[in-house]
Every structure is written in structure tokens, then in C-alpha cells.
Amino acid sequence: MAKGATHVLGLDIGTTTIKAAELQLSGGEVCLVGRPAVLPTPEGAVRGGVVVDAPEVGNALQELKTVYGMQTSKVIASVGGDSSVVVRITEVPKMSGKELEEAIQWELDEQTPFPVEEVIYDYAPIEHADADPEATEMEVLLAVAQEDMVNAHVEAIMATGMRPVAIDVEPLAIGRALVDAAGEEFAEQTVVNVHIGATTTLILIFRQKLLSFVRVIPSGGENLTQALAQTFMIDQALGELVKVQLGNLGDGGYAEEVGAGEPELAEDILEGEPEESLESDSVFELSSTAEGSATIEAPEDRATHLEIEDLGELELPPGEVEQAAEPGAEAPPEIEADSDLAYARDQVAEVLTTPILDIATEVRRSLDFYRRQHRNEAIDRVLLTGGTANLSGLAELVTDETGVATELGDPFKYLAVDAAEAPEDYLRDIGPAAAIAVGLALRDMLPE
Image 1: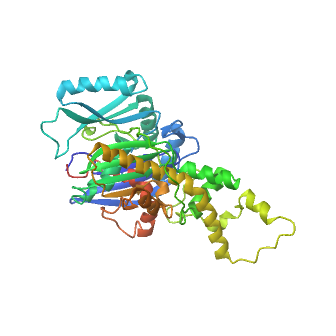
Image 2: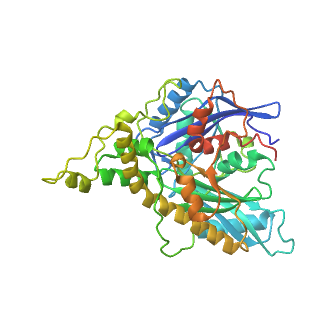
Image 3: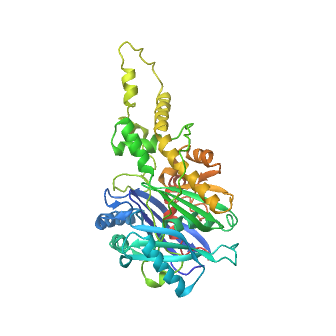
């Protein structure tokens, strides 16, 4: 086992939600402690994954700590922000030691948009078991983040009395939760993760359990919310509620691809306290799920979905309202509540299909690009995570678009769980959103 934190809270502070999962290594088994949480980030306190109001985030974390009764003060967190974090899988001539360090310094100058003296970075060679020993090139995972952003993140955590033992990166955390924790299940497979966050979607490809491809798409759950808000002429908050309660893709229409482009790569890093705990596979993050206020309710009382009755303000799109109101038009027949709900879901599906299909198309393009670079290598499966992953019909749409079997990622699948503390249906609801938090907590608990 890796040496380090064996009872720790994994903490993913996203733009719109905070995700927390407490794990403990006991007798060689990784156990989920208590009930994991997915709760709203204080409005405006985190922008693009970057903490801009540390006191407000600190207050939310303190409340989370109190309400959920976290039993450890040790925290492994991730930081993110598409403008403050850069992660690349880059190719360099085969080398090691000081020579590789010097090459990385050159890569920092070439690939980061901010001054090198203001960043924290980490790198790690990617060594595949079947790599050609005669190859003259090697792949290196490089992660860079602005130091001020990392400091703001750490400040918010330490304000609660919790102690950050490491700051890690989202893609590696997801890989631990979904791939590494599975033991040998994916040892000979190529697995794709599509993590749909609030403002970005992350596409990761793990080949033989090693991260081999990273792409960031500047589109996520908020794009779906905005589409609903604009179509139904409602505010963002109600748009989010509609998405959560009625969000689905129905039978979904599939648009055709409009040309392909090469993906942009980005992602990872390392750092934290104490210094001796910050070894091995650290790096950085991007953002996460939905929207809301910062009020935390007791776990027993908190519903994972809001009540349908709250959707009373939802009206038909403007065009349909006008058509129904035409003089002389025959009055629509009385409809049952179930029919009314089905109609509303159809309207929502029609709005959501285009933006979600745009994401699915980018996933397909990314897989095509990866295959071209890897001798048409087979892709075994796609795992969906992020707050939008639970959208009804999404897995089927991605399967149809990519031709690869797609399913929800379950970060709790390989953990020992006390059903009395964390019911199965609760974990199923929050699982996709909690993947990063679980992977963070697993950092020092899996066999090397």
C-alpha cells in the first residue's frame, strides 16, 4: 500500500457544488465512513473552479463538517479552473533525471499561459507495459497551476480547522475511483470517462489503467440549464430545477456531425501539507455540477431530488402558447396529470437534445482522434460521471453516437459500504457527481 493518509476526507470544491466523501482503510479494505455529501457552493464564491471568496467557502465547509459529522480533519482536495490549470500529456525524447527536469522547464515555458515563477507544477512519465523498449520518444503527464489559486483553496480548507495533506488533480482522482479501485478488471482494457461538470466536460482515456488522453470541452451542465431558461423564458434557478426534475433525452433526435477538429488537451498537479505526504501521483482539477444556495440540510431530511410540485411556474414555449390561444381554436381536451407530465418531459427533451448531442459528438471525435494516434485501438467502454450524468437517456445517446457501450460510473462500487449509514438509492443518485471526491480520498489507500 502507498504510505500516507488512510483515514481522510476527499473534498471536491466545484463551481456550483461541493462534494465530500470520507474513506478509511481498515484491514486491507477501503470503507466508506458515514454519508457522502453533494451540496451547493455559496453563490459566486467559486468561479470557473477557482475559489474567489475563501471565507464564504470556509463557512460552507464548516457547516458541512458539522452537519455530516466528519470524523477526520485530514483532507485531500482538488483544485481547478480552465484558466488557472493546465494539464498536458506531452511527448519528449526518452530521458530521465536532471535531463528530464530540464526538458520539463522548457515545456512549462512553451505550454503555460502564466509566468513560470507564479506556478506550482508536477510531472510523471507514462510507462505502458507494452511500450517499445527501442522507442526514442516518451510520454509525460505535465500539470501546472497558478500558486495564488492553490493558496486560496488551502486557505478555505484550513479556516475550518481541517488539514489539507495533499492537493490533487481531477483526472487522476476519477481514474482511481473508477479504474484503479477495480483491481484487475480493466487491466487489459481501454476505458473512457466522460465527466460532465458545470462549465466544462472532461474526456479521459485510460489504457491499461494509465491515463493516456485528456481533452477539455468548454460546455457542461450550465449550458443545458441556460438552454431551458431561454426556451421557457424562466430564470436560471428554475431552469436548473426543470433540468433536475424533468431532464431527459426522450427518444432524442441525432444531428449529423459538422466537420471534425483536433482535440485540445488539458488537465492535472500536486502540492499540499505536510511536505512528506506530497509524493507519488499528485496533480490538479477542473470543475463539477449544478447550481443552488449554500444552505445545508440535515442528511436525513435532504432530498436528492426536488418535488415535482415546485415546477408550477413552468409554461409552454412562447410559440406553443400563442398557438393554443388563437381565436376560434378548439379548446384542448382535459388531460390527466400523468399526460401533462409526459408532455412537459417531451418539451424538455427537445430542448436538451441539441446541447447534449454537441457534447456526445465531441466525445466521438475525441475517440476517433485517439484511434488515429493509436493504430485504431479498440475502446472497451465509456463511463459517465459528473452531475449531468444521471440525465435519463444520456448513456443510450452516447452509445448510439460513439458505438461504444456506455454506462454510469459508480465510485462506490468497490468500497465497503454500511447501508444503514448510506442507503443504496442515495449512493446511486449522487455517485456520478461524487467520483472526484471518492478518488481523492483513495489517493493513499490503493496498492501501488
